[in-house]
Image (tube, rainbow, N blue to C red; front, side):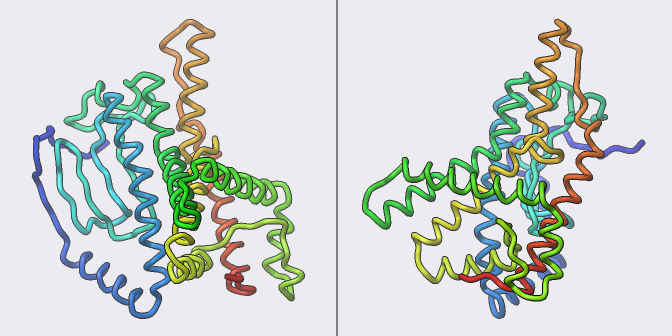
Length: 310
């Protein structure tokens, strides 16, 4: 089996690379968005901050727990630009659909590439260190949501209301949970709404909105002012943070749940060698991904057919 070769860490910046082709292609897409669809560019800017903050939470705690992250990217696919710094590669990739921090040893039996020692891995860290690393991403988004809500409150009233920030946070979490539960327990209503003849027949108890509608809302928020923009930014952060805490693979919550279960089993069995392999949950991961795809398609179809009032 071939594995990627990771160089021995070099202090300072090194190995800078840029792809003119993917750089120009990405710049062309962004320019087209700026000319014809600024709303998507605004949404992309909001999501960029959300993604980078989420991954920075993972990265920061991983370093503190003794792990060695080897990659920190915004985006997926071909690299636009990247540079190595103190053993980790930072950069941008062409598909701005997310981001990731690369940690080795996420499962008990995964192989390590050359240059990565066992002590550098996720599995070598303490259970507390692993749990903190996994939860840091979602909680970074949740903290940013509370800050955004509180700043919006300050702009509107002149008082910095942390209590109001947490109240808004709870409202978003409650609404997201209700929408997810409705979809899980009554999927036929959501699927049927996709083929409804009129908007009145397409009503569902509570649903998500697609990126198309999110872009419309982002445009409205930006046009309305800073306070509304902060409220919408907070809503996006809170939703991302909460959903990632669900104990379903491949979400962060599943890794957290595996860590807790493994530690409890070790305590009960008094055997530190007991492990729980997150890879065994792969079939459930496919089910989760399929459900998320169906949820996304449902939201997109309903938004295209019936729109969303902003």
